[in-house]
Image 1 (tube, rainbow, N blue to C red):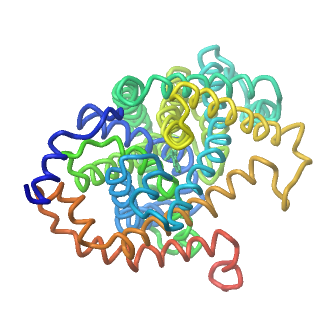
Image 2 (image 1 turned 180 degrees about the vertical axis):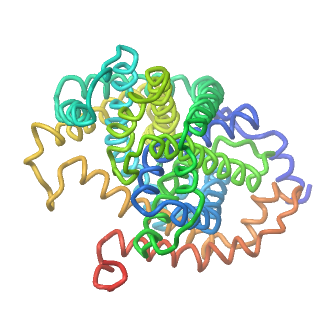
Length: 468
Ligand code: TRP
């Protein structure tokens, strides 16, 4: 048998007893579930609000296309070829080299990101509860702001919801890839889509909604700063779950017959569409009630409850909105936890169940400190930031960009076009017309762009007059 035939055989038999996604739809639901999260529905709209609207959206779209797509594809290649967790895959593809450290950074980033992400997800669940019990009824805008401040700086309630959220996440991951992650993604993602469409229709049918749509879709480039461009690129990473080995880990569960290029495109389009739909559900409503869109982190938790208070049927739509946020956060959190669990179980040889228990518990404890750092422990500062801030800053500005940088360098310079083509073509069965473009971006464009974002994130570009 020739080498090619042997490989084809291996493909046909599809390896081992390793758990994997069972269907094409399952892959898309899980990977889109990872990508679509608080980043899309909470962060993207407020970043758009703060950075001038449509011009920012346009730049974001360009970043997704030229950097987001190739980095995601690179991660899928590494994972599916390696058939292991983020660290194990690098060890297998590049034995005896330090490339596995990229996977290490990813696992560390997973701990950090999930610990603060779960805190915010817990807030969303508290708000679902508050909406159902009519907790915002009759409150003035100022009082709603106070509710948020008092709640997040408290002790018992935020920690309670953080624990509930992590328990849910842990239970799904505990059940495995097919029976846990895939199964729940296939239920939760359609639910999310229905909710966001209902909210979008509600928002655009409000009198005065047009101004919000204009804000979102009619670019005014005078409002766009160089800083906004770099923020857009950084956010493209976060939103697509890149740079941390999430897509490497999920890639390792993708069947050898799946078309990786098409999967990447579909997941990216889904993520971008949901971010835009979130904008459509939010800005028309915000403008219809004459509220300033640039309300930063508080957009979802202060501005919107206010909007819902004034909207006909607002209590119901408020409930739907926070349910949407919670569902989106849950499918993202499982993907972050899976990075750690896959590492623990495959490299440290734990059972999956033990790995899930330990990872969930440790992350919840770190999360407790993130939550407390917004209240009783707010005086404890590291380099001028509270603990929550340290976790967020270090992961988003340091670990994710460096991770993405090394991932593209790995494909562009180490793995090379020949082996990349083998993986993308499923050993020669699919055409890969985009191969040379992809390799060029991985070699030069993406690393350069990511490096600039990294320098900016570190604060090392602040001497440039246009980045002030
Ligand atoms: N992409 C998710 C969001 O938009 C968050 C997320 C999940 C993530 N996995 C990640 C971010 C890995 C960075 C890295 O909310």
